[in-house]
Length: 494
Image 1: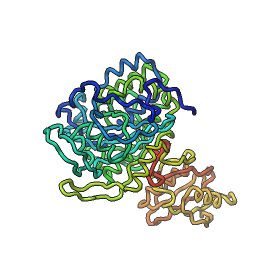
Image 2: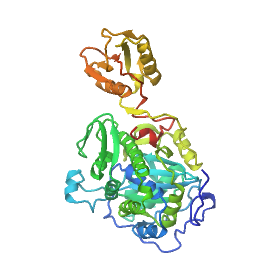
Image 3: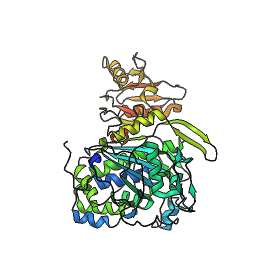
Image 4: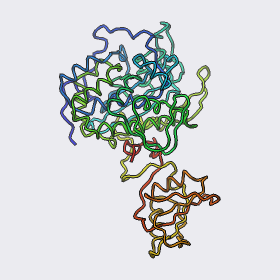
């Protein structure tokens, strides 16, 4: 698709962009310390701030009125020796736990009590490609080892030299400006815009789009956030969606596992917005945008022209246009004196990742996958013995071959079943391997699960006369390549 025309203030050609006018007029000081920032994982809402605002072109007058709702910050004030601009646009997205407009009842229901901390662990770079046809989202873990640039502490006024910290400490010591400086220093990626969102805008936005559908192969329960989801498909409203993206005690993966779930939520959110007709309804789009902007802070350069330019360019945006990853980690539990346990980035892989952003290159190669269903156990881990439960010659071989081509570890030696009048395909399984059986049943639509104690790890498929095909399935974590990248259409519900 050819690059759409840009407005005069567009940032589409970074090498020719006029420099931001930071420092030309007096700026207001950073907000006082009462705006406290959190420890939470809302990468989903931060991505929404770009995707929603960039996904439709509506009237300039409407967008101008919405522009006035945005609280402004100056994250680029007096910044020098910044990285060279690349191609496309880079937005630094920061999540906070602002909850002033959430009712006491909702705070209790969704476990939003407690004092917020003056820091943030939700830091992401969203890269919008030069042709506006691709969005690459890179999550930067809160515990990443970072070297803080020399700065003045915004709370105490004390001058600090460069020193090691966890990445989420940058906001606590120097607010948006030090956060931008630290990220640019670590990635050598020039940040074009800064967006900061909170709990309130997330909940309201999810509600105004009518909820977001997510799929989970396993039950998810987290006593800290109150999340309690059985396996299956769910349409989450704002409060429950907030629990889903914040949960970090679901499994041993903690924050890294939470990031994967948040990427899945982002993809589902994009799918909801782009498939619901919302983008064709200016008034509905206005309502969604107001929900986002009501609790958003942004740099002064992110305004009406930028929103309209992105809207015109990204009308064809879809889940397959987005790709998600986390910066490659080289060493877990890297101990730093006075800081604690940190995550140290892989220097070679992370440099290649950020170079791809600077050069406006996709992070992954598109894979044609068809309509594969998400399962909790990869087919390559499931061993299957096929039996022909009918009098149809060769049915056992056909089922065995179809399962093998989908990735299941069949015995390649199908046999005839004791009973030859089976109408509905049966999956006999030891109850101890019920997750494998459920994954296999997903590949055999309409089949019957039949527990058999003592059967062992090999599952038995007794093909019935109802057999038609084997459906493609894939594991929950389809990360590919050295960066573990997933596309939006790979993590959304099939």
